[in-house]
Length: 295
Image 1 (cartoon, rainbow, N blue to C red):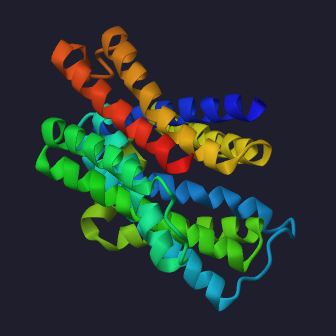
Image 2 (tube, helix red, strand yellow):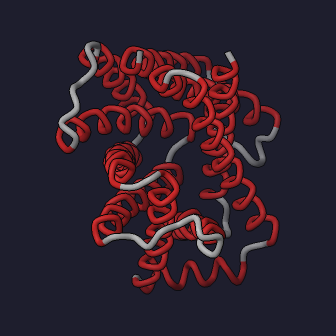
């Protein structure tokens, strides 16, 4: 059962990451979502340490294009996620993005990989759509809901291209070149003058604690990713994927605890009785949708 504990710890960490994302995006030092998207994408460049060790091969043209195809929707997904987080609460945004991402991954897999849909796809689809609609229609504004949905679609598209690149090359090469493409995408954000000025101001004026918190947050995200890979190696991939829904349960608990204990840093309207039940029901529907889809 070690895989189960690893998967649960990974989703616990992912929930903490998304809550810290919300805190950082709302902070005064990061005024534009593009600034945070730049930080996250540029940090992918840490994989450059593998290059001088001789573990990575020169990419083919096909691998380069696939890496770009992974990076563009990935950067768009985090950009729109942070746009949504700037407008709405993390415990509302994350379940919607996660539900849309799961559905988009299956649909894009059907289109690009000719993979079949799971037997219980219709039931899972209904649960995810109802949970998402309940959360987005009654809790999210039009802009924040649209941004969350676009983020989920883009993340699903990026995930499919990740699957494709791993069929064309080994894991380390695919991982390395897709991460380096993220760095290229981060640099592309500098092309827009407003983004360039905002990123420059953030780099110059943000406090050391803010930069350290971003680094710690993304380190946690990387550790969670490694735990998921370990869980997949030890257990069934379908069960590990189904456990992804637990992230939203942990996020709901975090919002409940930290908003009360640290209201100066985390503010969510979760302590109103009607709001709590609304979020709880929506989250449970989405979690059930994950289990139905992946089991």
